[in-house]
Image 1: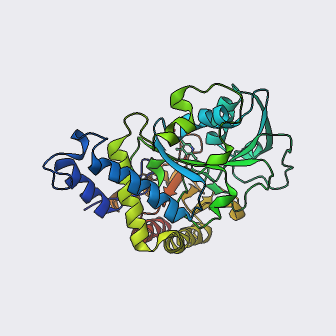
Image 2: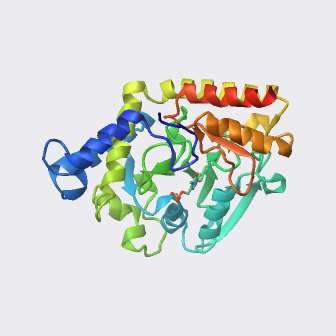
Image 3: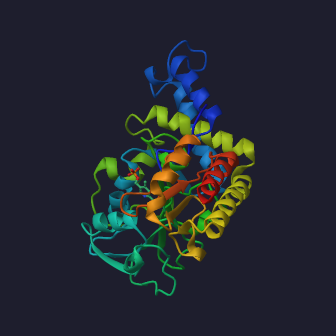
Amino acid sequence: MKKHNFSAGPCILPQEVLKKAADAVLNFNNLNLSLIEISHRSKDFVDVMENARSLVKELLNLPEGYSVLFLQGGASLEFLMTPYNLLKVNGKAGYMNTGTWSTAAIKEAKMMGEINVFASSEDKGFNYIPKNYTVPTDVDYIHCTSNNTIYGTQLKTFPKTDSLLVCDMSSDIFSRQLDFTQFDLIYAGAQKNMGPAGTTLVVVKDEILGKTGRTIPSMLDYQVHIKKDSMYNTPAVFPVYVSMLTLQWLKDLGGISAIEKINEEKAALLYAEIDRNPHFVGYAAKEDRSLMNVTFNLTNESDKEAFDKIWNEAGISGIKGHRSVGGYRASMYNALPLESVKVLIKAMQQLEK
Ligand SMILES: *Cc1c(COP(=O)(O)O)cnc(C)c1O
């Protein structure tokens, strides 16, 4: 039987998507060829790329004027591509620091210009989202991270700014309804909520590009990738295909509004147990809790051996906390069934007994 997979990333994908992907690796579109041994310029694959890009636009409800790209290099390369493409020569950018990934984004951006970290929750181990900050106005763009995968916090509202707004949505894209037009650039590594590792989704408003006054190397230039319909060089064919299948699965399910209800139900159940069960304590501030990554600790470390045995025997996998936080982290991405959450809750109740 398949395990209850709470892995933070790469993470669980819908079982039917994995089956279709496995079939395509052996025989794609009845071509009697594998998906991964045909030209990316063949009509069959160009259709995959086009379908994946249009599903993103449809699910995010994007108007004209946005481009969708499937790039490589992970979200981590976007930490650098963002300033390359948006930070003017001698320009400034404002960053919100809400965790390890924001910190990494800030480090890369600092190589390109002056960075103003206008809000940070580092003082309390990133267990909350800063609230009463002043958004700088003398900047080319503002950068935030919508969901902090490691600490289990999530932005419920986004900085209000007249500058461009950039968001790293790696770990909660397609999980909740937002007005996606408030963002000028969104990026997300596929492996948290969309597909296998190896491709990164970038959604960018066309009109913001080409204004920095700097020369951008081709592979780092969004305009180069847009002009070539995300096929400037060989794309990550398998990750793009599996992402397309996952996006189609989400659309068939009823889109983001449908999955959001399920995600809220899963999170409500698990947080209720954490708050009720005296053996556990949540890590993140209650009002900032993530629907995707639920972080919690044992009240008494001496229960560790017993609890680890219980959840292992229940067929649970991937709930060990990140090495920088410790404790436990249950990641409940779109494809995680409600049933798996119930099994985890039962394991927590078994410890209590
Ligand atoms: C995992 C993660 C990253 C890093 O993604 P890579 O694809 O491994 O580079 C960046 N930001 C967030 C929010 C993440 O969860």
